[in-house]
Image (cartoon, rainbow, N blue to C red; front, side, top):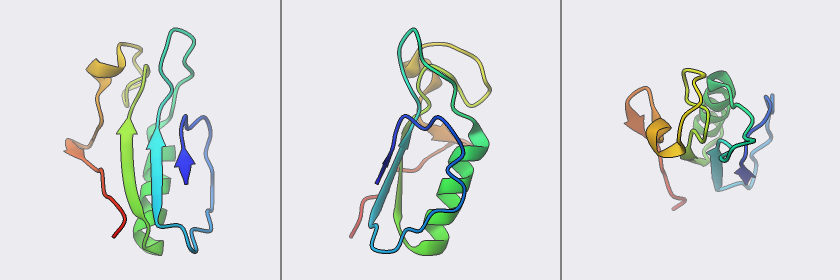
Length: 87
């Protein structure tokens, strides 16, 4: 399941038969922000339901809500990279 660009809270997900969830923010000059709590919600749900969580990038808007290049914003969540692959 691809959740990119993640533009809103997806709330409760049914991840039954979903092996892999990819999350990422939008890039480019007209990019819309992605909120950190939306990412955390999906990450928590994948852990509880047994899906692999792959965080691609924050995009143009960083986890701190500051607009900069996607390379500067990177792909760290609380200082760690989460890029699991399905088994």
